[in-house]
Image: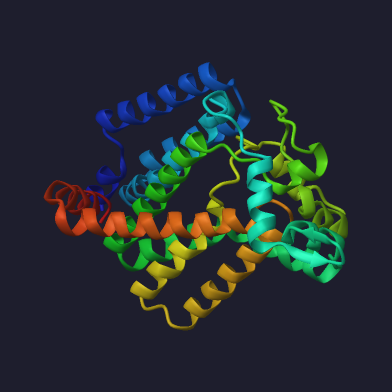
Length: 311
């Protein structure tokens, strides 16, 4: 019993690591994007779990992959992609209309424009629920893998991070305006445009809440519609769900995939081209990770060492 108690007491080294990591994060965050309460909450969660017990330490070290993703995404606010390349607005709109346009009389509409004129309360609610899955589903799936298979958990987590990094690079190489921007502002670029709930506002109105409004008010970058990473995430989950042999749960993942892809276009947040780019991004990330895992000995050693660290 005394041995168990001593093992649960963090060492001085562990206290220093937790303090240095959290302080560095808070300082860099303050310098780049200013202070926010969420930063303190994240630092508190990391320190608490890292020091609480050996099991919680393994948990937070494993899920630190997702924390790294969130921090990078958050820091994008400090470096808007439209400062590095011209934003694609009209060219992307015309490509979408040319490839996927829907003819109504003498007019050709993009799928977003069609659904904006033909929406329904049922589709509003269903699209909202599907769109809410983009973060909870990957995290819950990761938690399930953490309990069942730590090595597969890391493969999923690192693939998730890799796909995001690929997407972030494309954001800066090809800044792209979402469909709702064209609807509200036309083809003229407007820097510092705030986030917009677009069609998801109808979900908020239906339930008389401000859920999506609160989420998109904190958007890191409006001009990051291509690729749609919302469309990439469920595909990664489905791929690793098949590897984990989850049975009927994979059918649920497949339904979520289709639902998110449809909702992305229906709500005016992405073009079909954005969704296809997200699918390609996920496919490339999955393939690249598999290549690294199978053929790069250093990466394989890193993966095995990381697995031992959290096991």
